[in-house]
Image 1 (cartoon, rainbow, N blue to C red):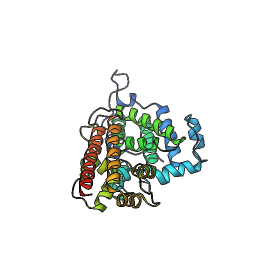
Image 2 (tube, helix red, strand yellow):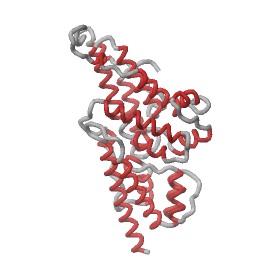
Image 3 (cartoon, rainbow, N blue to C red):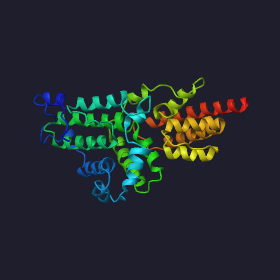
Image 4 (tube, rainbow, N blue to C red):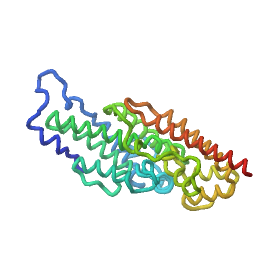
Length: 323
């Protein structure tokens, strides 16, 4: 991927060169991002984007286990696809407005968005390229504009959803990719702490539909629970299998919506109770995410999951009375 362009900054480059050399004032070019940080981001991206054996050199270079092809597919294709749209879109699915929002950010930089513009790996590569572009900038004005773009990428399109996603991956039965998830979270936390503080929450969170509440139909409840931005929780196929065991139901093979719907049909009160406990657990996970300056999404996510837990417990209580 080519280094991103910043047309607005380039247009004013000749008119505004920033602090003169030798003036003693530190301009943005003197605050470059260390090269090793960009290489770390590229290595993490390669593990997510390249199935084995393609990701093996990157994993070894980071001191991580090399995942098997089966594990890589189980995580990134079947269990927890690494797309922002799934976590920030109101439907909890690929594409849609959430993907369009990320693709628009690529276009603002003068880049053609790839088909998987919202994939975590693609966003990590873009973050690394912007860090390199700051170092190559010919004026302080250009460097400062690129730094602002990099901060926006972190705040709006990565830290807005990746901590919850990576927490989910770290809990999967994936011995090689759980360490990758923890290292990626640590790297992104450092980027978020050093980004320009955000005055408000990311747009996707400000515009999110409400959490599940009373009066939802069965279909509406399933849709809300499987959209992380609505429920505050991430339910993987492995979670549903564990939930079926806990609630004493069968676990029918199929898409998550079908599986969860079948569980609710069998033992509604027990499954609602399990879901409520899951949401409470997720609220605590969100609160324990690394803190960052400015508007901190972890409080929003924790509150969203807590609201879902309360709504589910109320539904469970009503089911028990009706039985």
